[in-house]
Every structure is written in structure tokens, then in C-alpha cells.
Length: 198
Image (cartoon, rainbow, N blue to C red):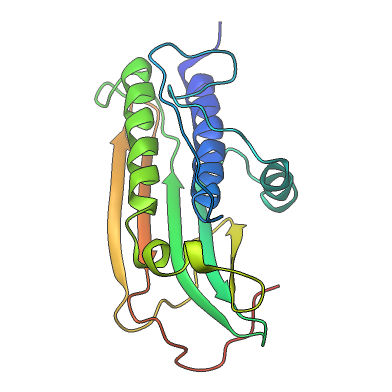
């Protein structure tokens, strides 16, 4: 029988993968129907069906060493123009800790449902940011595209002087804590030429 820490690690692995998939897919500019289920089937985690894109899964496997991400995992979105200018628009920061089992904090079954709620909150939040309203459905190769990168620290790009930060959620469990934060740009002009990250 798996220990509570093993289950926590498994939950975190699937949660972070589903989170990254859902956020990137929300930036593709296509209509996506994410069906919620009362009873999970097969590979459905957190009572939400998200079709995984192979390109994103391969990117995660090749770029993220510590998976599941104990520590910090950052997903950053950047606007990239044909002239090579790059404007950071958003960064989503997932922080996860692993602690010795403790009495306080929610048990695993409750944590699972809280992670499900946090995933839904992230999906809704991703469609309410200035980037989504202004750029997602207007991107094309002639004017600009939205790019993403994922890395294992919180050293994200500068979002400008009027950036906003929001804590989407914080979960405290018997095995560790999970926090999801969003930082986004509100001033949508190039302050100085920036070179796109590699």
C-alpha cells in the first residue's frame, strides 16, 4: 500500500501536468471544451477531462528535471513579434513543499478535491487576464504570437511597473503545501527592446 507521501507526490505530478496543459491550451486561441465529470474515468484526474497535447508533454519531460516539482515551477507567457521583440505578459508560479506528516492540514481525500477546485479556478482565471482579452484570439504569424516557457524557479521576467499579482489558491495538507500565484502585465507597450528567451 502506498504511503501518504507517495500519494501526495502522485497527486502533485498529475496536478502540475494538468495545470500546465490547461493554461497553455487556453492561450492557443481555440475554443476548448473542458468537461467536468462526477465520476472520473481512466486518465481523468481531478474530475476534469483535459486532452494532453504531445508537444507540451515532451517539452515538460525535456525541460523539467524535478518532476513532480517540489520547489517552484513557473510557466511564463510572452508576446513575440516577427521583428524579434518579446514582451513578457504573464507568469504562473506553482510552489510545492513536502513536509513530515503532521496532524493539522487536510487529509489526502480532501486535498484531492481542493486540488480539483484549484485547477478549475486556474482555468477560469486564465480567461480573465488582460493577455487573454487583448491578444489570445488575435495572434497570427504576421503580427505576433504567444510563446511559453516552463522552468524550475520563480525567476520570471519583469512584467513592468504596473504589474499585478494574485494568489489563485493555497492548499495546506498533512504532507505539504501547494500555492499557485499569477503575475501579469497591465502596461502593454514595449518599454525597451527585449530579446526573446532561448
